[in-house]
Amino acid sequence: MRYISKIKILMVISILLFSSFAFAATNLPNFTEVVKITKESVVNINTTQTIKKRIPNFNFPFGINPFGDFDLFNAPEQYREYKSMALGSGFIISNDGYIVTNNHVIEKADEINVKLYNGKEYKAKKVGRDPLTDLALLKIDVENGDLKPLKLGDSDSLEIGEWVIAIGNPFGLESSYTAGIISAKGRDLGEGPYDNFLQTDASINPGNSGGPLVNLKGEVIGINTAIIASGQGLGFAVPVNTLKNILPQLKKGIVKRGLLGVQNLQELSPEMIKELNLNVDHGVIINGVIQGEPADLAGIKVGDIITSIDGKPIKTPKDVTNYIGNQLPGKIVNIEILRVSVDGKIEKRTFNVKLSERKDLTQEDIESQPIVVTSLTDDEKRNLKLDYGVKVADIKPGTNIYRAGVRKGEIILSVNNQLVNNEDEFYSIYGKIEKGKYVVLRLYSKKGYKTIGFTKD
Image (cartoon, rainbow, N blue to C red; front, side, top):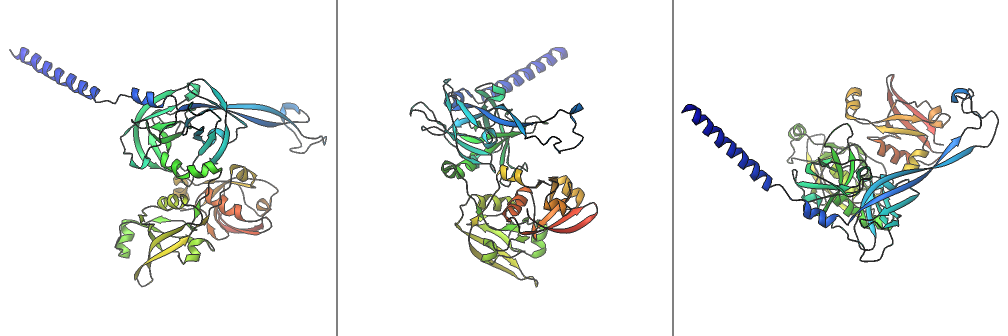
């Protein structure tokens, strides 16, 4: 009898488990409708880049020139051209031929070919690029009615755990679909000042770049952009609202952004709020104000605490960067701050600030600079006990900055008394300095701190 009872118990457990699995299976989403909605809107992008490679005038044994860069025979330089091919993805957003993709897919391309779902191929032209968000807009000439644009959704309304589908052409495998969920929002990968990635475990591979990340309605909620190659299930997409914010400017060929002129922002901690006796639970402290920029001209000072901009609560430094970066130069923004005096008195003030234009260097501008820097990682900051700065990754011998004593591996803390938090800030500040003007750098190395000056060449 006991044996029969055990069998009955096992049968009941088996039935319950089967029922639960069957129930779970019936509640899984059906992705076939998403495929039907989107399949004709995703495109294959094939790019060609012409690369010139210098040909040595004389082939030394083992490929080593004992005279270094010196040309013994004083012969004119010769170059050989070759073609480099690359693949990517994109998606149609209008009946008149506008296509969205990643900037890194087409940035250096001399020729861009777009292949539609129906097999038709078109030459595409670059309309607008924005390296800071890694977005680009292409245009193909096609008769109306031959294209099926995707609807742009709302990435702000996304919830963590929501189902999403990544579409593209990974490794040239056209019209591939992978499903997953939104794992996180607002990820900062250190790629640029406007990092605000959606993280997903939907499989994203090389060739997926520029393709859409869609919801179960078939609406675009992100643009597939990056992966962490050493991990699994770590894909990242630019939120579609970032695209929507700059799309009108991309159509004009150039993206302009507002500049407030504050730097080295710091999030308020609970301990700071308690110690300063503040009646708020959020805000960021301004630790640097750039002389002559809008914040300075409006009267905002170092130590002021930004609590809101245009009525939107400011909780992190990224909130300031993203909001101001989404505004056009010339716009007047309303900034609420708290100012704590030396005697502990707290004053609430409001400033109407007219934004100037943020000047960002292109990749070509950066490559032409005599110095290459990289942002410090969190581990490097921790080990060096620094809160800001950039590391010198490379420097051209013979330039004034090299002669002044700057060397690879050193940390640049400030340029002309302006603190530098990351590589974008460095290139923005350094790039604005005209040739022939004097530059003062504050640096840190294993030997300690030093200050150097030189004339920019």
